[in-house]
Amino acid sequence: MSKKIFSGVQPTGNLHLGNYLGAIKNFVELQNDKANHCIFCVVDLHAITVKQDPKELKNNIRETAATFIASGINPDNNIIFNQSMVSAHSEAAWILSCVSRIGWLNRMTQFKEKAGKDKEKASIGLYSYPVLMAADILLYDATHVPVGDDQKQHLELCRDIAQKFNNDFNAPEFLKVPEPLIQKQFSRIMSLKDGLKKMSKSDPSDLSRINLTDSKDEIVNKIKKAKTDPLPLPNNIDELVERPEAENLLGIYSSLKNKSLQNSIDEFSGKNFSEFKIELSDVLVEKIEPISKKIKELLNDEKYLDTILLEGSKKADIFASKKIKEIKELVGF
Ligand code: AMP
Ligand code: TRP
Image (cartoon, rainbow, N blue to C red; front, side):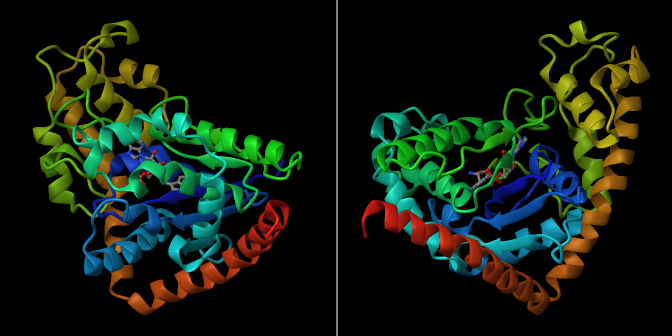
């Protein structure tokens, strides 16, 4: 069955292995099915929910587009664009924020994490961020949204917003209620320094993540320094209990190799981490180094990247402006 795919990635720099395995690798597999219609968005409006340097933001928008292309997304067959170029996203976010309930947003765990202790100082945008995300998805009648595990709650909210809008305006099925596409395994890649913490762009330690722009030497060095535990590799899945670093590294290996966790455990059972780390580095270098090289190459051609984003936003605007017109009509404008 043909799917309408929509997903977004924030242009906040340091795109990493978690973004790749949790989301972008999935985007590539979905676009390879020619029956699917895919839209991949550089969500720059989401990025400014926390302070950004304007010059860096501009670079990061191009770098995120370059990462999509370098990872294998074909801009000729799919839409790649940046959110701020299509004004319907901001308009729809406002209208949907009038449908969303404060109680719903108060439950969002990502806001609590990102805002930290001093919530009073967080931007209003950071708080209403998931409403903008719902607008992104609902403007395109997306049927499926591939994301990492951390976005699950935002997608549930998006479904609630769609249903409430349809109810409030007596327009059954008008906004399409999307399905999340979250991988069952390896949908949450953890820090290389702490198996209980998510791999993240904002971790102050660069050793905690493999960036998609890392060179071969950086990758090998980071894996060498990655935290492990004193035991040899496990003989079965049960032995991974309370060994988060071992589980994460084996998960990364399995995901890159498209193998089951069980298969990887069988391959390395009883071996030392030093032996396993060599194999893990090899597969990381094999998969990530070409992406890293391609990103750097693409970044030398800003004109090409800007054209992709401009052309993509023109195509996206055709869908989005039609939908926002219908939304306004229903609201009574
Ligand atoms: P962001 O960089 O926050 O815009 O995230 C872009 C995509 O990467 C989203 O689908 C996230 O769910 C996914 N993602 C981010 N960090 C991780 C991680 N550590 N493990 C798995 N997926 C992730
Ligand atoms: N909130 C998502 C993240 O941080 C990014 C995002 C914005 C998104 N709009 C979206 C993802 C729409 C999927 C669909 O990862």
